[in-house]
Figure 1 (cartoon, rainbow, N blue to C red):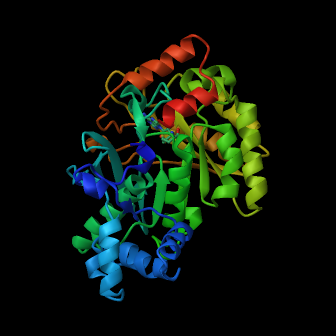
Figure 2: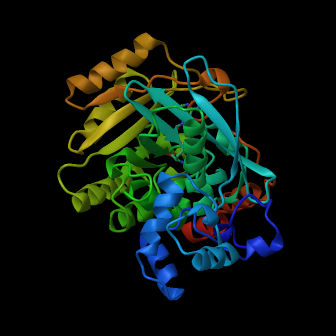
Figure 3: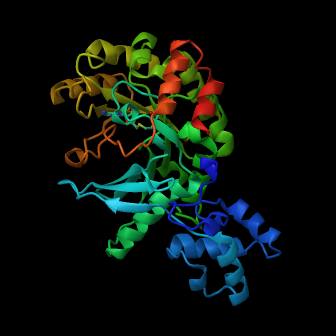
Length: 392
Ligand code: SAH
């Protein structure tokens, strides 16, 4: 089965596999689904309210729908999210879940970061990651394919259900695609999921508070605004191509100038009130010198952006170090003095390895990563091949 069409956790029977999973289906598609059944399109509204507002997964519980239609839906459709298993909560309140996906033998991770006045859920879009950024633990795990939109939306849906069952008054206020994987290499599923997050009948989260983070897949950034109006974050990490190519190998394909041009295109399509977030992970002795801050300020001077500075989060064998707080502050101060809004992202949940770049999950099969390496060594890693590898 194509991974993008997977319905749930794999625990369902073969018969259930043939059912359409309504979780993560955008409103327009759900309306078409009902019209195709000979029903009115507003059935979609009813069902979405049950799924996302009431947290219901059984059609039988949808009491404003006729018994006949409920029976029909039970036969042909399902609402199935992946199973979430909690890790112990971090000292700072950060929570992490292991998410069983595919046939249940693979795992990704989702992280909830509570802060004053908001709670951000960081979700995964792929099993592992193909990009292999030098400083990220996920890439070291290898890559095993895309999550379905049900598996992406299901992370938020199941986490929200869990919070509600605990009587936690505050729900999820922000969603970031900053967990495992490169969201723009799972474009269709991510765009669908984002539409459900931002839909009033779905999670009802403002599109500004749903953020897709990318290492810089330029053609997809150019396409994004025509498919979704959610926010964009770009993982830059270096102001010069030579260093960026070492840290983020994708830079060899899409160098900084092309990446920033794509960001400008995105900004141009969405209008004056939006800005792009630039992520910059600070690694001691690598990209944290004042000279780097000067170059970065020069590069970003005329881009409508804000910079998120992320002190490197260590993991075993990474070979990188987190800079001193003093160094981080000096870097930030330089950007601020140059008129660039620069926020320091405080490290959250690192005692349960829930911080940026520490997510590893369980990747069953590393062969695709090897294939990609082979392609790259022989100079054949064209975008088409990368996409083929990432969309099995
Ligand atoms: N592939 C996407 C989303 C996943 S990574 C992307 O590259 O944006 C989410 C963010 O965490 C990225 O900015 C990434 O560069 C950063 N990150 C990865 N490893 C990290 C580490 N060890 N310490 C701090 N930030 C890290």
